[in-house]
Amino acid sequence: MSFTTITDVGPGNGLHGLRGEIASTPGGLSGPLKSQLVEMLYGAGLPSVDMGTIAPFNWTSTAADNRKVLDRIPPEHHTKSIAQIHTLMDLEALDNANISTVAIFLSASETFSQRHTNRSLPQMFTHVSELIRAAQAQRYHVRGYIGCVWGCPYEGSVGHAMLERCANFYQGHNVTTVMLADDTGMATPKNIELVLKRLRYHLKPSQTGLHLYNTYGQALANVCAALDQGIQTFDAAIGGLTGGLAGTLGAPAHTKGVEGIVSTEDLVYMLHGMGYTTGIDEDLLLGASLFVRDVLHKPLRSHVAQMKLMAQLRLAAI
Image (cartoon, rainbow, N blue to C red; front, side):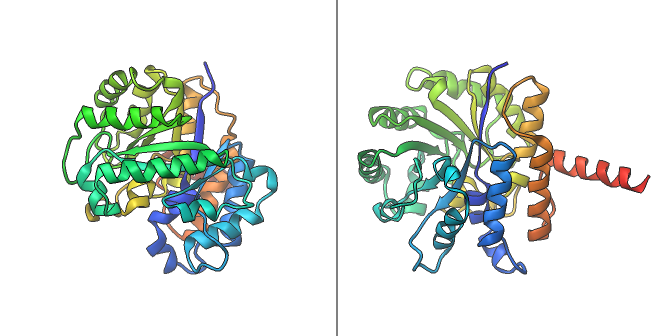
């Protein structure tokens, strides 16, 4: 079986989606603790980690804290980390950060775009085009996201014509990786197959990845459907932390508190069981998951982590 690439978006998108809860959690998961989590993920073999938006030190925000986190981790991990950019100011804040990849976002839904960015889709195309050109001029690799691919919380299904337009937009800008986001969790394996087959004429499987929510319990089944279509790049979040593209842009009220993006632990366990290689150590990954649970005092959303923890407790009781 071939190698499958996983990016953990927990430290960035996942914690962004939980920011209100973290603020009220004793200690929270910021500063040195977040740095420790990122190091545990890289130590477990994750090839890349999404750090979220990174802002200058003098900003009093999560984004400023992310810059401090980045500066605490070893330099060799900077180039493997991904930073999200939504404005040119976000890009400027990456000066001397030694990051090589930036993530940029589009939504395939007009209503979602207007409600969460205050821009129409034509305006977003113009704005994102400016961001991509500026990032590429500074030699960043660009990871382009398309949100609401399998459904919008406001519009329902999204037309294939708009999906193709978004895909062609990124293709025309020489974006190296295009991530298709099921940020509402509405997709099913059949939907995954249909969309990937349709977009195959616009995006090669080798340059396409998936960002899948488990809102309806379909994420792992959807991964299997994507693997059948040649997709080998996926986002996941340690402990299934809630977040993702909807969290990044401002999650609709009815999606808050529901199960988030597919957990890294569950995804890795399944891929290894199917014979795929990820380069990730499952035991070290479990350590990172338990670290998140102990710091945030939140139950794990990973089925694999829960079962492995129960097994450890049973052995300790013998």
